[in-house]
Length: 445
Image 1 (cartoon, rainbow, N blue to C red):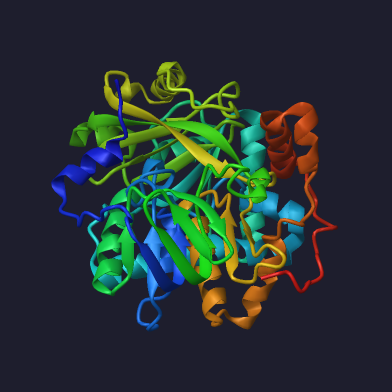
Image 2 (spheres, one colour):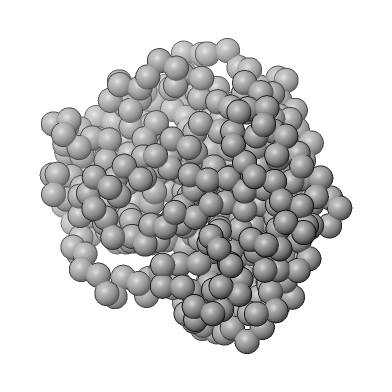
C-alpha cells in the first residue's frame, strides 16, 4: 500500500476551477473561514441573497477532514440513537437525530439541484454486533428506533448471513435513507456552484488571526460584517475555543476494484455501508466503481497528539476484515491514509458566538458529514436572521457551556489526549444529561 488519499486521486479525472490565494485586501458582508463541509454549506446559504461573500481555505476546498472521510451519509457518527436516548431521553434524542437527517437532506438537495457528479450511492446502513455485547447493542438500537417511530430491520446471526456473507457477527440492525458519497468531489463541485453565483473563493490561503472584523492572511486581508469560522485543527493561538476540540485519529484504505463475483460473495443482494459495535470500530462500504473502502484504528493511536502514518494499524484492520470475509482474503488494498477528526468532549458539535463578539461565529467538532452540513447551514441561517424559531433548541445542545464529564482546565494536569479520551468514552457509554438544559443567555447565538 502507498500512503495517499484516494479521494485526491479521483480529482484527476475532473475539471474544477483553480482558485488562487488571496493577495489583496477585501471587504464583504460575510466572510467564511474554512472550506470543508461546514464552510461550503454555510456559503451556499447566501446564494441569491445579494450579500457579498468571501470563502477562504488554507488547502483546496475539502482538502482536510472532509476530503479524508469515508463519505458515510448516515445519522450515526460516533453516537448511536440508543446512546442519545440514554443521554437526553426520547424528546432530546429525536431532536438531535433530526440534525444529521436534515444535514443529509441538504447535501442531497444540492447534488440534485446542481447535478453534481460525486459518486452518490444509496446504501442502507447496517450496524453489526460482535459477540454477546454487540448483540445487546443491536437490540438496544432496534428498541430505540421503535420507541421513536423509526423503521428498521433486525437480523439475528442466522438471518444476517443471508444479506451479508460474513462470519463473526452476532446480530445487525438495518435502516434506510442513508448514502455513500465522495465528499471531496461534492465540495469541489459546490465550489463551482459558489463561483457561478458570485461568491469569491480563495484556496491555499491561511488565516493567521482575526482582529475585530478583519481576518489577516500572509498577503492580504478580509474585513467583513460577519465572520463564520469553520476550520479544523484550530490552535489556541488562533482562539481559546480550541480548548473545546481535539482530533481522533482513524485510518482509511481503498482496494483494487472487486469483480462482480467478489461483490456478490460479500453482498448477495443489497449493498450496505457497515460498521461494527467495538469501541474502536471498523467500517466499510463499496464505492461506485466497486472498490472496497475500509476504515478503522486502534485504541493506542486514536488519541495520539500527532499524526501517526505507519501502515501497521490499517494493516491489522484489513486482516480483521479478511477474517470476517473469506471471499476477500486475496483482495489487495492499494492506498491508505490517516484522517484526523475534530471532536468535542461529548462528541456533539460546538456552534457558538463568543460573548461580546456578535459578528463572530464558530463551528467546532462536527463529527460526520451530515452533522457538519447542518452546522454550517445553521450558523449561516442565524447570521442571515432567517433561522426557524424551533431551531433555537440547538443553541443549548451545541453550547460550549453544556455539561462535560471532565472540565477543560484539567488538561493542564492530565493532558489533552487523556482528557478527551475519558470524556468521549463517558459520553458514549455512561453520560446522562439531566443538567444539560441550559437557559438562554444574551451571549447565545
